Image (cartoon, rainbow, N blue to C red):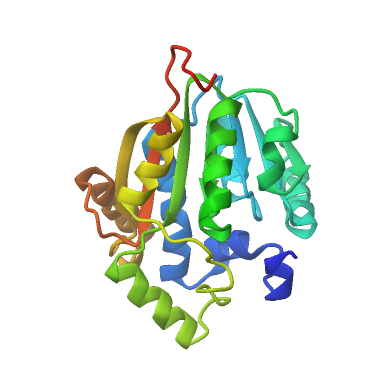
Length: 249
């Protein structure tokens, strides 16, 4: 079942939240792009796999900076929305694939320099998430990295999620969209158990999403990322596959 359709989430939800949402909501989504840029992974010559594209904020922001992006999602309506936006902008280095991410390991997509999952891993049960991490390892070139952004199940996020669900500010999160709970420690453990090394592990959208003004919010977000607080609303982890072959290769 496509949960977005079940909950009535518009195919362009993330796109419109970023561009026309109330400023805290727009900051929330824009700061994810700031965080991705901060990692330095999405650069010239890089082949990127984006798992769970949604309405394509990553593709529309970074396509001009990398060699190629392959976007994967199981929601045909979201991919259709993104395809239209890419056509309007005459973007030609993005390929879209209709596929459940849990089957990505069998999709014959080739190898990637970077894999990105933004607000995705929490949408599948933890046991399936562990299997997916193994697929990410196999899909990366030696020395390649996976970048994960997911809610940080510490008291600050738990309180925010409870409030958002109570006032119906967003489509229901707990028990509907969010099926697994991670924090910096548990996210690191899942990736390192698969053979990854941890390159970056931090949190953001602590208070930066509430800072008025796009530029000030961006600066506050970068400060949060660089400070490395453990209790921000979103976890960002960058996990790297060793350059030398291991028992998993």
